[in-house]
Image 1 (cartoon, rainbow, N blue to C red):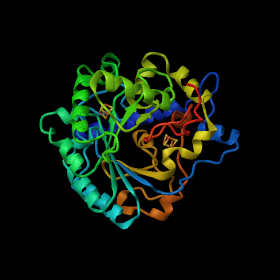
Image 2 (image 1 turned 90 degrees about the horizontal axis):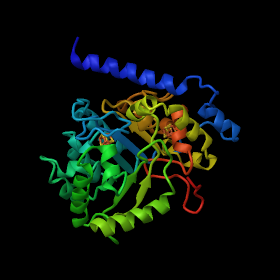
Image 3 (image 1 turned 45 degrees about the vertical axis):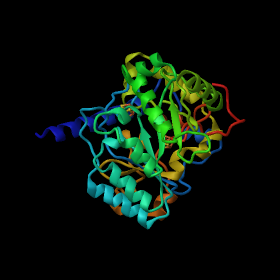
Image 4 (image 1 turned 180 degrees about the vertical axis):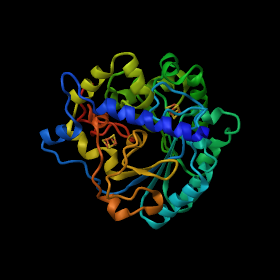
Length: 355
Ligand code: SF4
Ligand code: SF4
């Protein structure tokens, strides 16, 4: 049997195991996500449009972070083909979807990354690169900052702490120093500078099994610490909750913290976040072109509801823009505390809950 087929089968078994863990009976019993919605007088989640097409171009990455929900790394071979990339650009050309959000793995390692950026930019779309920063300093990619700047790509960069030790414990030895070097190169091109149109947003996620603190307060701390220690500036900070998926789920199970973490997410359910969860305004596409409600459902292989198209080649804007969303207990990660999305906290400043 071919190695790739074996890998695919083990991947499917792994996602099935994760779904079972999340939807299993707990002692004492934990509610399902749909129960939390109905207990709070809320309907099931439904899309309200498509503002973002988020594409995961593959699992290849130059890092192997402990919390990675994609299980990405240097040995992964899943990578979006040119044919699938073309189908994505075709969808953007035919429909009024304002934003192309490119993620991975390290999306820049996909051979079609630059072509996708160029084509989406030609169509006048806002393009987001979810960048791990160290790729900007890797051999073969050092001209990336200039390429991103030339195409006015918005950079969303992971930096889980302004302290080297915390960052490296999650992302690997030496990652912090190379991330700071990457940020310096972006700053030098105007990214994150006051009044600059080049957006550089940083992403914080907790190192352990806790909820992120207030986004506004942490942003102020990041701003002063990064400025005073490294003379680095950025546009905004996004705080993101770790969802119990893939490596982070395995880590929780290994350290016997899974039940406590789920309990924490569920107890922190905030009905005010439900309106703003990201799946309501996005469609997620995997490296083979399959469609999902979000990147997390993609990783758990929870497809769209049965009446929806399955593949980018069958994209049906009208139907997808008002679809019912497939949810599970992992969704409590998006609705805990101040909420969590690819744009950071969901609730507005001033209505935040203490962590
Ligand atoms: S979290 Fe991001 S940088 Fe880290 S391994 Fe996963 S995809 Fe790569
Ligand atoms: S995990 Fe996905 S489907 Fe569930 S609430 Fe979050 S974005 Fe929506």
